[in-house]
Structures are given as structure tokens and as C-alpha cells.
Image (cartoon, rainbow, N blue to C red; front, side, top):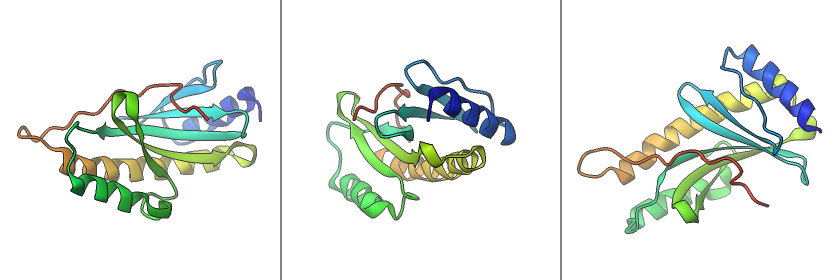
Amino acid sequence: MSLQSLHAILAEALAGAGLPAATISPSGTAVINVRGLEIGLEYLEAEDKAALYCSTGRLPAEASPELYEFLLEKNLLGAKTGGGHIGLYAPARTIIFSLTLDAAALTATQLANALERFTETATGLIEEVEEHLAGPSGMMEISPLMSNMLWV
């Protein structure tokens, strides 16, 4: 798939879902806003995959064992993440939720559905992570979304 093809599919998916437009950069990244959640999209050309990802919070220096157990259990075989995965972007200590899609087989309808499911799963995950990370103020820190962060 080419970036132009993926951009056309993305434009059609967002328009069909009534979501704000997004542009794929020449490097193959885009930021998509779905109900206030910033979702990164990155085209992984070598694998012909499209990755969706977002921050679910920042891992504290002294994270509790319960948080690690929660994240590992959620991540197990992708069963509780709708096929997505939870990982850590170590330089920023950012907990990332991601989902990889086969770009060659992707249609606008499939992408729109994937964005909807991804957003629902990510929102629930953010709420659950927030419970584990809440400090005395009851607030957690959501790290800013960083484009070009998926290196394979």
C-alpha cells in the first residue's frame, strides 16, 4: 500500500464516521482525534502495517507491583485489549496502548470500525490505569502523544 492510498482510506474513514480530518505526514504518521482522545497512526512500510497507538499514562518511578500485575494481565494474548498491546516507551516512561492493522487489506469501513473499537478499549484502559496511578489529588498524568515513536 502507498501512503497516498492509506491517506485516502483514512480520509474516507474519518468522514464516514463524522470525525475531524487528519493528514498523514510524508513520514507516514498522523494524529487522529476521536472524542477527545489523540490517537497516533503510523504506517510501517516494511511490514505494510498501520499501527494505532495512544498514551494511557506515565509510569511512576516507584510503580506498585499491583500496577505491573494489572498491565501484564491486561496484555496477556491481547485478550483483554481487543487484540491490542500494552507497552512502555521507556525514555518518557509512557504507557502505550497499540493495535496493528494489515494495511494491504484495510478498507475505510474497517479502519473506521478499528478506530471506534480502539477508542473504546483505550478509554477503558485509561480509566483503569488511572485508578492504579491516581495520586493524592486523584489526577494522573497523561503523556503527550509522540509521532514517529514506533520503531521496528
